[in-house]
Length: 424
Image 1 (cartoon, one colour):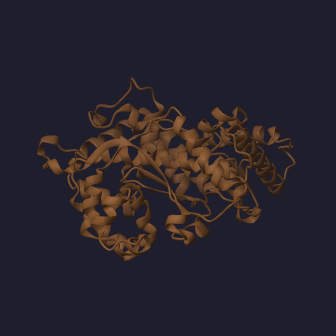
Image 2 (cartoon, one colour):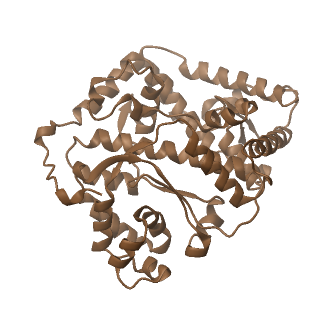
Image 3 (cartoon, one colour):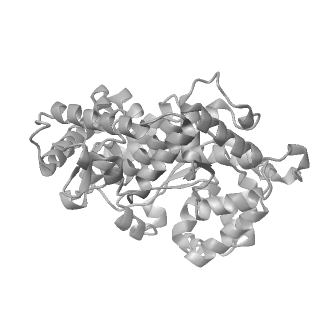
């Protein structure tokens, strides 16, 4: 198949050498343990060989095209079985797949709570800056009439399509005034926007992204944008995996905002996160570490271990996350083929062939040729895995917690300015 040299972590990530290797050595020195990257590299090679054999291929004599073709065939097989298990008659029927997947996710036992903007506060922001493009589409002359008649969660899902970039940037600037008292805990909401109501408002988004999902971090809303697509192959896996992905994303940022509520300039943090999502929430041996890594690391640990720095605002359940494939093989157990494979790939023709379920299923659904195969979710997963493994060394974990602690101020120093009119 390939050798250790061509399956090096830096090659898989397209990371610049010698900077990547130097960074790994710095992490090892800071953590007091060695060869975490070497161990991970060996694990990836072994997992790839085992999975390739499970596909009926010879790991020692398989081309990239053969492996990619076998993975797409496996994605097709699993998608059709998943659709059958969910009661979908035609595995290419978009609307039936959306309806049945959302029904199923409504029954799954999983954390749904998030700490997000109060709906009353969201309405105030729209009153201050009426979205004229949206009002024109929906036929409203006044923003008050629209807010009385429409679901505020759906409106927040639509404004990124109905308004231009300058308007959106100015709108987000309002968030700098946000206080922790403007937020509340409620369940994540899934909105399925109607094409009959909204028309082709998201046409360019669908053409570019080739899927129907977006979300509002600040509102805790997952949005299925309006679509005029009747059939699509692989749609069941696509809709299920992406919907669950956005559940995780909303809870990720919910826990981050919870943590940052005891920090000065809370509103500024919200704005910067929504617009640019900076990844320098902490540093580890000189490397920026995103909150995603920290949340997943502590989320994987047992609930008994919950650092004091997270209390009382961030609880163990806030850090809980699950991979999409874990939910999927509850429906179809054979999908365990993809379990713990999100950071696994091998190099062929100067580009990884990944075993990441999201990348493979999207490549299948979107009919992506071998030369353009998706690798984004794999590379993100591998970067996260590297940092999580080094973070597991006690010294580095302690350093991260100290940095988070130093960002905090005492809650009594904050001006919450509770407003009785804020209740949704």
